[in-house]
Every structure is written in structure tokens, then in C-alpha cells.
Amino acid sequence: MFLEGTLYIFLIYTAILLAVIIFPLFFKKQWHSLINYFNKIELSEAQTRKVKYLVLCLGLSFLVNSCYMIALKNVHLFNALPGVTGFNIFATFAFLLLPIAIGLICLYGYLRDTNSILLGTFFLFLLCFLCFGFAGTNLHDLLWCGTRTEWFSIPVDAGYDLDLWINFFGCPSRDYRIFGFYMGYHVLIFCIYAFVNLWRYFTPLPKSAHNLKLKLSFLIAILIGFLGFFIFVFDYPNLFGPIITAFTIFLFIPLLIVPSYFVGKWFRELTQIHQKGIKEIEAS
Image (tube, rainbow, N blue to C red; front, side, top):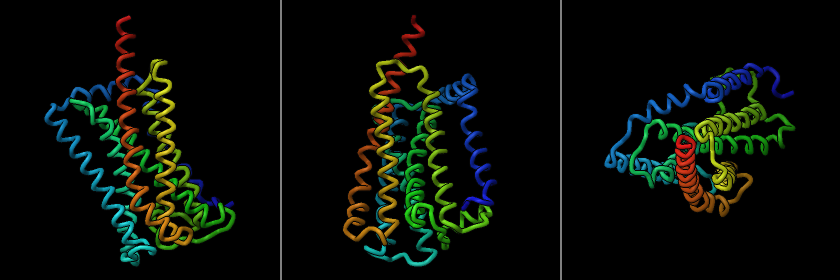
């Protein structure tokens, strides 16, 4: 079994997952109290406009610059970032700033029609939206390692691209299958964390929100799936040619702005339905 000797890594990830979901799952009152405590800090309309502008500018800036640096690195396009340093620059933009950009655009969609920001809700949705972005990034790792190892059937040793992860965990093997497996676990961790917190926040939810909840779930799955696949396309030049790669970097990834924005917008609508339902319960 290729995972032999890595049980401690699995236990570390599992401990992290349990640590971040126990609070919203089993300490409902304390969780809501924490959100409400920070919600007492409410930004003025002028401050809210500045925050919305900052979120939008950062999101678009990270997205545009990520596409630019990805194109610089890609061997089918500019191939201008060789070596370890070039890879580190590419990885920072492609695997860190790009998913952050997606999360910020989701957040802007949520904030766009609001006149005041409650900090508790703001940070809750920021964390959940970032989880969607990083789930997409790690989905790409699962696809990449699966393809490289013929879907985990043969061992293939990694190069310097996995040095950081291997050295951090002291992994006994450089097999891409190990990394791919744990990146798949990353996807589960990010999704479970986001959905547990969102479930706690939106409970109870009126039946009138059922269709919107289904649409949101479908759109989130599309966003994570397409983000992961598009990163996989530009990160696997041996499998995809220059035309597909160019379209992915300069067209398809920027178009993710649309589903990202609507994820945030629909969550805002869901929040309004939820708050209305809470008021009706309290009035009855």
C-alpha cells in the first residue's frame, strides 16, 4: 500500500478537521455568541463602501496577476520562469493568490447590495469562500497526481515541487500518489469546514429557501470543479496543447468571475430569507 508509513499524516489532518468542526457542530450557543459578539462591530455606510471597493480591487488584481504569472511560466506560452525560483513564483500565484481571488470575488458578490457590514458575518463568509477556492486548488492536485501515476496504480517520485510539503511533514516517500491522496483529503477538509459553518449559520432555514439552497450547492460544485480542472490544464503542459492552455488562462479562468459573483450574491439572498424566517419565528 503506497500510504504505508504516513498514518501520522492522516491523523494530523483528521485532528485538524475535528478541531475546526467540533465548535460549530456541538457548541451551538457559544458559536452563535461568538458571531454575534463580532457582529456588534458594524461598519458605517462609508466604511462599507471602502471595504467593498477594497475586496473587489484585491480580487480582480490577484486574478489578473495570477493569469499573467501563470502565462509567464507556461512552456506553451512565454516559458520565462525557469528553475526552482520560477516555480516558487508560479506556485504562489497559481495555488495561493488565484484561489484567494476567487474567494474575494465571492465575498464581493455577497457584500455588493449591503449598506453596512457586520464583522462576525463578514469573516465567517470570507473563510467559507476561501475554502471553496482552496478546495479547487487541491482538486487540481488530486487530478494531477492521479494522471501522473496512472490513477495511483504506479509509483512516481516527485521533484522539487513537493519539497515544502515533504519536509514539513517529514514524509518518508516522495511518491506523488501519497501527495495526491492527501490533497484529496484537503478537498474534503475545506468543504466540510465551510458547509458545517454555513449549515450552523443558516439553521433553521425556511422551506421557501429550498430551491435557492439547491442552486447554490450546484453552483459551488461547478465553481470548485472548474477551478480545479482549469488549474490542472495549465499545470500539465504535456497533456494539453498551447491553444487549450491559452484559452484556459486568458478566457476560462477570468470567466470564473461569473459563478464566483453569483455564489456570493445567492448567499446574500439566502441570508435575507434566513433572517426573515428568524423574525417570523420570534414573532410567533
